[in-house]
Image (tube, rainbow, N blue to C red; front, side, top):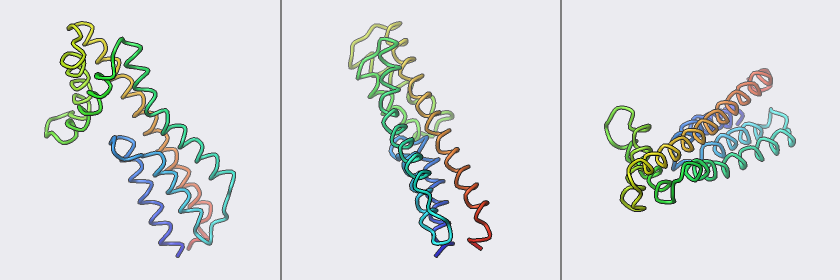
Length: 166
């Protein structure tokens, strides 16, 4: 049972890291589920404080994931069309077989959203797209770092309870 929960927790951790980059997978909450599953292993002592605190952080980062790109877009004069364009551009950038599509897609999507749907003029649209892109990068970086920290905590907990698990 311990090994099955350990492997399931590790899979959730890896999916969480992937989800920190892909917009359709909630990376930080899935990584937190990996920590929770590990703590459900009978051999590992359940630490309520650890699970609650990491859960609060995961929820906070999940909420901030929606706020940070909007702040970046508004700070640089963008609109909802630019924010939506960033998300759509990211999805297309992931699917399209172009180099650096995951980076080019969000910026191009924000620019198209501003130019076509918000009717923003060239330089202002570029600035808004840049703001949306910077917000996206900041949000992605925070999610990625959180999931890597959660993986580090997972490995630490496994290492500290190695004798109990095996």
